Amino acid sequence: MRPLPLPFPDETEAPLVTELRFPTSGTTVKGVFELNEFATLTPENLDFLRLYIKVRGNLKEVERVLGISYPTVRARFDTLLRAIGYEPETPDPQEEILQRLERGEITPDEAARKLRR
Image 1 (cartoon, one colour):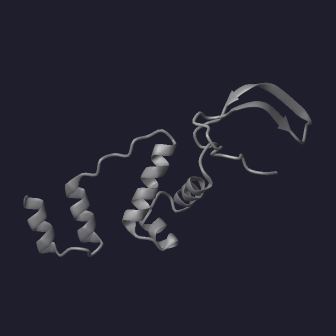
Image 2 (image 1 turned 90 degrees about the vertical axis):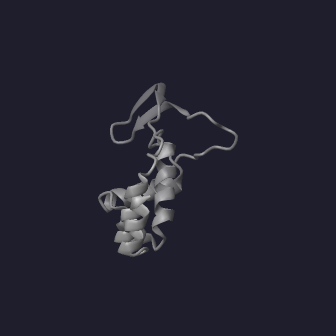
Image 3 (image 1 turned 135 degrees about the horizontal axis):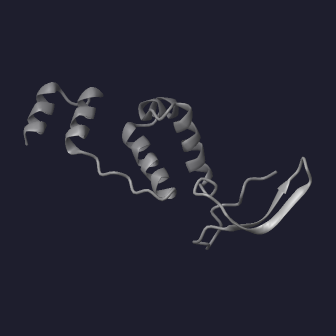
């Protein structure tokens, strides 16, 4: 078996499935069925989603496993969210400062200065 050939060149709409076959029983169902948002993910987004689920939604662990920077992980996560129809939340600037402090990217003094602004 092969995966769905998605995305398909020059197609902007999600495909419709017109036949389902259950190999064990030999049953075939014909009709028009919609694919859910996960069925139409690109292989890259699907691999990212699988890893994200495997590490129980821990983006820091995704960062470690893939060996890429946290901002790159966040960007890929945002791409995945858009692909399934959600707009990523705008990050809270204060939360971003605290995360940078936690990762050791800025000192406590720098964090305090930025939080006061």
